[in-house]
Amino acid sequence: MRTRVQRADRVLTILDVAREAKVSIATVSRALSVDPACASRTRERVLEVAKRMGYRRNPAGAILASTGKAQHGAGTPAVALIAMPAPGRQGSDNLPAELLLFPEAARSLGYAAETVCIRSLSELGPALDRVYARGCSCLVLWLITREPYWRQPIDWRRFSIVSITLEREDTPFHNVRRRRFGDMVRALEELRGRGYRRIGVTLLRHGYEEATDLEWLGAVRSFQYLRLRGSARIFVLSRGEFPPPEFPDWLRQHRPDAVISFNPAAWGSISDTGLRPPRDIGFLTLHHAGIEVAQEPGEHRIVSGFAEDLRATLTVAVRHAEQLFRHSVFGIQERREVLEIPATWIEGSTLSPRDG
Image: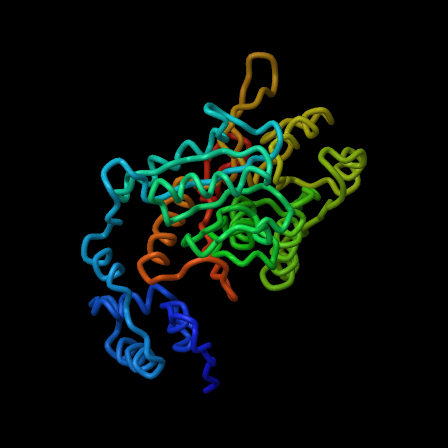
């Protein structure tokens, strides 16, 4: 077994033990805490690795593990959210409306929370200084940018950091995000279970989110190759912003009996062709399902599909940041963990009922 060489001037963390033992941080935490949920054989192996590496638990972490919450002064937030939305996406108090769930998620775990919305990366350093001065060492980042913001002259070592945005592969922070590949497979399974056999998939190029489209596409191709075996056909349109000018021609050429789209706005483009879901065609969105859309004068439909479970994402992010803090994992990481959260299925009225 290859042993990771540690620098003499570097403090060992739970992450180092997890890598050496080839288990997750959560497993190491359970093993060190003598949690009965951890199998005895696994616990013995983790403890052996920790002893060999000379790992010692952080005393503050031991206190946190016993109380389940950070020991901050009265009125001082334990967890901070720094958000920088895309231009034009702001809700009350300059915070994107969906991220107003953050304080609720933090309170549900017993923490106070602070949210700071910035408009540009030039405001990032001062915002971090502000929350750190208020006693916060657990940090959740929601920064919509393709810029390598972590390369700014900022002392990241003050924080245990989790990001919840779509990330570049070289981002050096742990990430909690939506499970994209699995959700696309679930969408295809849902349509096949309802009897659809000609499935159209529209994927967009979202700029900084282009990697998302490629992951959706990978799921489509894998499903097509491994599961369909000729039982259904999939047609993919993946080019440009939505709606692309060739979308009506694409519909007429391939005649899908159902369409999957990331953008619920595809509903309007389908309606413009004279098709009426679910009578003429099924429609499923991978994002923002559950919204009400107009079909005929006085007639509305609820869009079927998936909606991101942002409350779950935020809750997991807060827990993960706190766990990193308990085990003295701070700042930029050589390797990051990615935790994926499945989206929530919304049964609307734009699909035919399931068979049976």
